[in-house]
Image 1: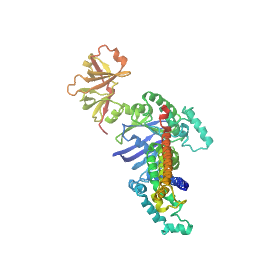
Image 2: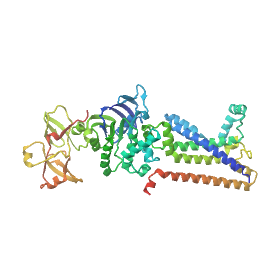
Image 3: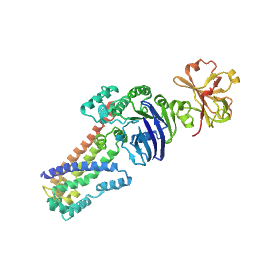
Image 4: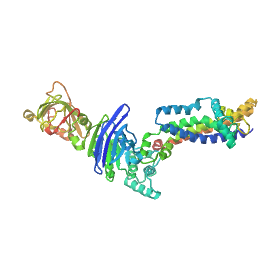
Amino acid sequence: MSLKVRIKKKFKGFLLNVNFEACCDNGEYLGLLGSSGSGKSMTLKCIAGVETPDEGYIELNGRVVFDSNKKINIKPQERNVGYLFQNYALFPHMTAEENIGIGLKLSKKEKKYKLNELIKTFKLEGLEKKYPSQLSGGQQQRVALARILAYEPDVLLLDEPFSALDTYLKEKLQNEILDFLLTYHGMVIMVTHSRDEVYKFCKNLCIIDNGKMILTGKTKDIFKQPKLLKVAKLIGCKNFSSCEILSSNSIYAIDWNLKLKLENSLTDNYDYISVREHTFKISDEDEFKMGENIIECKIIKVIEEVFEYIIVFENINNKKNKVPIWYKTKKDEWDKRKDKDRLFLRIPEEAILLIKNSN
Amino acid sequence: MDYSPILISLKTASLSIVITFFIGIFAAKWVVELKSQKAKIIIDGLLTMPLVLPPTVLGFFILYILGVKRPLGRLLLEFFSVKIVFSWSATVIAAVAVSFPLMYRSARGAFEQVDKNFIQAARTLGMCERSIFWRIIMPLALPGVTSGGILSFTRGLGEFGATAMIAGNIANKTRTLPLAIYSEVAAGDMEGAYEYVVIVLIVSFIVLSLMNYFTIKESKYSNKDVIK
C-alpha cells in the first residue's frame, strides 16, 4: 500500500501545499495531525477526488489518480477510496439499511446477504429500519463505517472520526472502531487534531501546519523528539524556554534562568528546549546543592484535575522573567508529600527536548 | 353558470405544471452545475426575466416566434397543420412561460441548499451522477421543489396577460377563469364574475394549504420527531 501526494490548492485565501509519501502495511494507520484550518481535510478530499487540486500529482497504490500535467483526474467513483466524513454524511431520508446498501452493485440476493453480514459485523441488528436521526452518535458512526466498508475500498480516509462524539463515548468508541477495523486490510489515513487519537491509532504521522507538511515520521519518534516548535505544541508540550548553547553538552534555558546538562553532545543548533510536564522528578535540597538540572520551585498555583494535579511554578532563582512552568503529578504522590511549600524538581537529562523554530 | 372556463383553466394549469415542473428542474440542475460564475449570472438572469416582465411582453415574444406569419409558426402550420396561436395549446404555452421562473428559482434554491457532504459522500460510494441526482439531491430538495411546483401551478391558474395576447378569449376554447372574469365584468355581469372569483379563491386557497401541509410533513427526517 503506498500513497504519493504532491498537490497545491488555493482556497479561501489560503494555500495548501502538501507533499508527502507514505507506505503502510495492511491495517496500519497514517495520521495527519494539524490544528483546525490547517488544510488536513482538504488534503483528504483531494485524495478522495471530491475536491480537485489546482496542480500536482496523486498516486494511490501505484495508480495515478491525479496528474495536472497529464490532465489525469480520475472520478471519485472510480478511485475506490472510502471516506468517513466528519459528520458521517448519512443520507437522512434513507434507513440505516438503505444507507449501507446504496453503493452496492450486486444482485438482490447477494445484496441481502452482504447487508446481513455487515449489519452483524457492525452490531446494528434491530436498527436496520431506523433513520439516521433516530440513531445515537455511535450507531451513526457504525452505519457510516459499514456503508464505506460495504464498498470494499482500497484506502480508508477518516476525517476527524471522533470529533462529533461526546467525550464519555469517545474512548469506548475508539476501541470499538479499532476492533472493527482489524477486519479491514487496506491503508487507513486518519485526519485529526487530537494527539491522543494519533498516538493510539497511527504508526506513522505527518504534521501539517498552515497548509504545509512540516514533519513526517514514526509517531512514537515524533512524540519522543518533536524537533520543531509547532510540532511540540501540537503534541501537547506546555513548557518552553528559549535557549543558548554553552558547550557541547550543556545548555542555558534563558526563560527559566537555568543551566542544564544534556544527555548527548550537541550536533546542531537549537532555539528552544522543552520539558514535558510529567517528566520532572521530585528532588530535595541536598541534591539541589550538589547536583545538576534541579530547580528550586516557587509554587504559584495548584490546579486539581480528575486524577492529577498541575503544579504551576517558577524558578525561584529567576528574577528577570517570571515564566510559569507546569508540573503534572499523580494525586496520591502529591498528597503523600509532607512539606508542600518547598519543592525541588529535577529535570532528567533524557527528558530535555531540543527544539528548532523551523526546518 | 358556464362551467367551461373552470374546466379549461384546470386542464391548462394541470398540463402546464407538468411541463413547467420538468423544464424548471432541469434548468435549475443545469445552472447549479455550471462551473463559470459569469455564465451562471447571465443565464440565471435570462431564465428569471419572465418573472419580472409584464405578461404582455411575454405574449408579444411568443407571438413573434409562433405567429402564423413567422417562420416557426408557418412551418408548423404548413407541414404539420398545427396552428398554435389562438388555440387551447396557446393557453398552456402562456401558462408555462409565466410560471417557469417560479419553478426554476425554487428548485435551484432547494438544490443549492443540499449539503455538499452528501453529494461528495455519494460520489466516494461509487454512485453515478444521475443516481446521485435522483436518489440523493431530489429527495433532500423535495420540500423546496414541491412548493415551487405549487406556486407555479397557482401562477399558471391565474395567468391572464400572455394568454389574452396569444390565445385570445374564445369561449369554450381558450377562455380561462381569469379571462372569463374579465369578460363578465366587461359585459357588466357582476353576478357572473362573482361566481368565478369565488371559485378562483377556493382553488388557490386549497392549493396553498396543501403547500404548507407538505412543508410541515417534510420535517420527517429532522430530529423533532425523535425527541417527541
